[in-house]
Length: 450
Ligand code: ADP
Image (tube, rainbow, N blue to C red; front, side, top):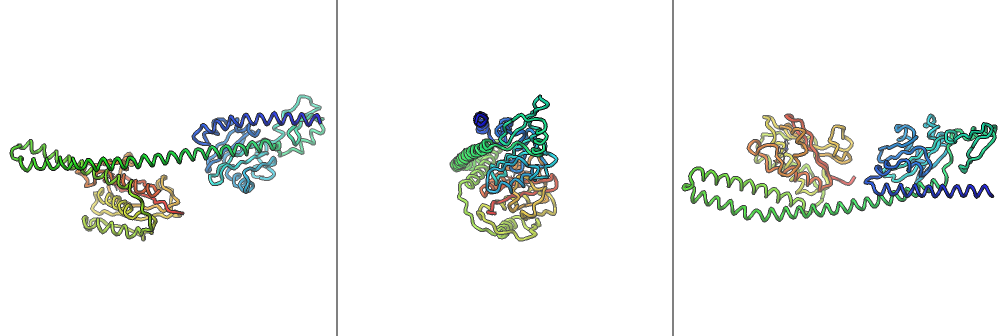
C-alpha cells in the first residue's frame, strides 16, 4: 500500500510537470507564425512533454528532427507504416518499435519506442517521438551487487545482480512503456494545436477578405479617377487643337512645335488613363463562368488579328484546345493580349506563334514552379525578341514597358497587368519563360474543379 502511494505521488508530480511544460509550449506555438517555427523554438519542451529522447516533425513531406532520432531518410517509409497503424485514431504508440517494424532494427538503441501523433492527415502533419532502448535509458546504480531496473509502470527498483541479467534479457529491444499521462499529454497538445491552427486560418481568411475589399476599393478609385480625368483632358486636347488651327501661323515655328508636343503628351495621357479605366473594369466586373470552347476563342482572336496583320505570322495550333469553365470576354482579352505581344515583339522575317496546352500528366520539370501542375497549363509561345531574365518580373507591372513606343508598336504597358488580373480572378497563375534573342513562352492556368 505504501509503495502504491509513493508511486501515485510520483505520478502526480510527473503529471504536474507535464502540465507546466505543456502550457509553456502551447504559448510558444500560439505566438509564432507557423507551426514549424513554433516547434523549432523549444524542441526540449516538445521532447519533455512525453519524456522522449528525440522528435521528428513532419509537415507536407518536410521533416524537422531534434534529439535522438533515426536518420531523416528512414522517416518517409516509417510514416507510411505509421499511417496504417494509426487508422482512424490520432495516436499510435509502441515500446517495441523495432520488433513491429524491423526496418529500423539497426536503430534499436535510439528508436525502441515510438509515439506518433497525427495532427492533420490531409496536410500530412505528424509528430513522431522516439524513445531509446531501456538499457540505454537506465542510469546504473553504484552498487555492483544491486542494480536499478525499471518496471512496467516506469518505477525504478533495486534488484540483485542475477535477476538484473534476467531483467536485461526481458527488456531487450524495448523502451520504457508510454504512460497514459504521456499519451494524454500528446492528445492534449494535438487539440491545442488544432485550435491554434483554426484560429490562424480564421485570421488569414479575415485578412484575405480585407485585402479583397481594399483591392475592390482601389479598383473603384482607379475607375472613378480615370473616368473623371478624361473630361478635362479632352478639354485640354481640344483647346490645343483650336489654338493650332486658329493661331498656328501667328505662333511661329517654336510655338507651334510646343503646342504639338502638348497635344502628343495629352494623347499619351489619354491612352494611359484609358488603360487604367480598362484595367479597373476587369477588377470590378463580375465573372460569368460558363463552359467556353477555347478553340473557338482563339480562332476569333486570330481572325481579328489577321485583319490588321495579314499573313505575316504563322500560327501553330498542334491539337484542338479544350473547353473550360471561364469568363468568355475576359479569356478572349487574355489571348488577344498574349498573341498580340507575341507578334509585336518579334523582329524575324518568319514569325511564328504557337498556342497549346499541357495536361497534368504531361507536365515536366522545366516548367515554371509557380504553376499548379494539377491543372491544365495553357501557353502562347513565340520566336520573338525574348526578354532578359532581370526584366521577367517587371513586365507584369502596370505601365511597365521595356522599349520606347517608337521601337515596337506595343501599347501602354497595361496588357500583361490586365492578363495577370484575368488569370488570377480565375484562380490561376501566369508566368513566363524566355531566352533573350530566341523567344518567349507565356504560361497560364485557370483553376478548374479537379
Ligand atoms: P504593352 O501594352 O506595351 O505590350 P504589356 O504589358 O503587354 O505592355 O507588356 C509589357 C512589356 O513586356 C512590353 O512592353 C514588352 O517589352 C514585354 N513583352 C511582352 N510580351 C512579350 C513577348 N512575347 N516577347 C518579348 N517581350 C514581351
